[in-house]
Image 1 (spheres, rainbow, N blue to C red):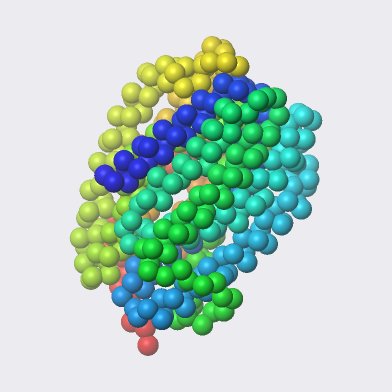
Image 2: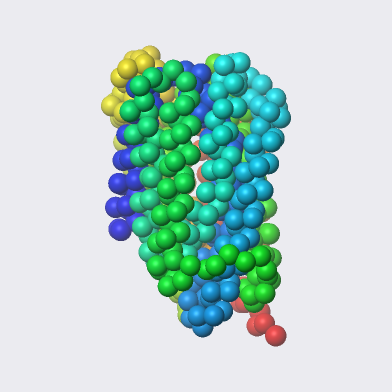
Length: 427
């Protein structure tokens, strides 16, 4: 419930930010450029954080019971490698962006491409801040402290303020500087909170002396395969939308961000809270209880998602109008975005239901089967994008995502119904 409350506040800030962007820019080249750059530049940092967090949180939960010197050494090494990797990733993002535009953004208007190049001044360093934020958030979640969920809204709040206070909004300047400042503030703030939770900063060091690394690297490598596959969903959507014509990215972006409000408030709250709890139950030698708890919650989440889908289908035009229809965002834009949103709502029951099962399998260290399911999801998504988008436009992209989550839920249920194999005793 704490996580849900924090998410509600954070998503409200995100909604206000989207309202401000819609008011200032409407459906335009600026929003096309921002949506494209945000998705393409963030996909790799978010992929790394997603894979590392899932395998890192159970390790950090176990590390809480070790001596202070061992914990400090591991946290310092973790911080050092994250900072090094983030710096390299930021430089590569900026250097490779012209190639990204030539390959994935060739369908964007020339003005949107120019603005996207400018936005990399914010999103390249944001790669470093995202990795640092992800590690700090994992440290907090290992202590079952979920303030990071509220602080996810910091970039949105800063962008909101910058956009609304800007004297002019004809270019990407307010979005650029708001993004850069927001990610920086969020990263520093979470690092400070994580240090308080652990009782130490974890002085960065580039070494691999801690005993946690062999198992962590092996698990992260397997998990990263699945995360990389799933992470390509966002760029594929942007590539597909960019080739549908002008403003398809913007339309898809508005619908996706409104959908993310619904996904986050209900499902993400349970998912974020569940992993440390299930890992603790499993670690105490009660895997049967962890499995029954997760399956029960999964069914409840599936039913809750179905109810939200029915309500959302009816209320979609009203919701889009309430949030976006002002300034440069017209009534015709409302109808277009609402149509796309409705097809995206079909993913809610399956997304809600699968999220808790993902945490169950992660707590059981069943990363290989998770990676296999993720690859299957990606293959289905890539195929259905090509089949549905030319026929349905951006709505087809949303329907392909819904089909992907339906497959994911079916696979996870089949796996979760079978007890996890007993862990081998280490020599």
